[in-house]
Length: 149
Image (cartoon, rainbow, N blue to C red):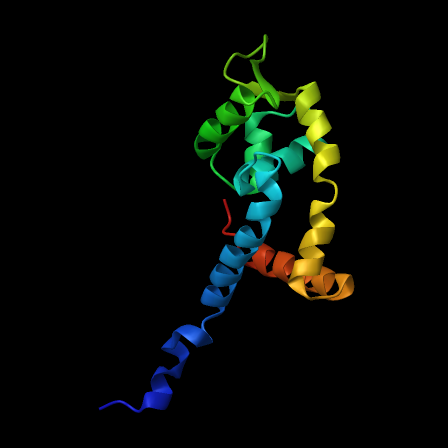
């Protein structure tokens, strides 16, 4: 019978991936009540963050920013359009390309969302400095894990 110590690397609580996964789940839960008043899901909020930075971008561009497949964004973007937050417009010079433009309602939502980051800092129980250091470590890890395309 194998030594239990040789399997300690396979214990769930010793897995970095589980620590990241479970923290991501808890982070999403922390956002949920804050986003409810904005009538946004967490993935919709992420899309809106990108659009508040860069209005008039393509679906492909937002997909790259969110590290997701463009096809998985389509239902989310259609919902935001149905809710009056954005307009999806095909480019006249290339109808395959869809551009995203915020509506006045979508722009106004940014003002309503401005306190969310501070609320998350408070809920985290961490200092802003500690959270910024953690974010930089996670970005470095993400960059190291990216597979070449």
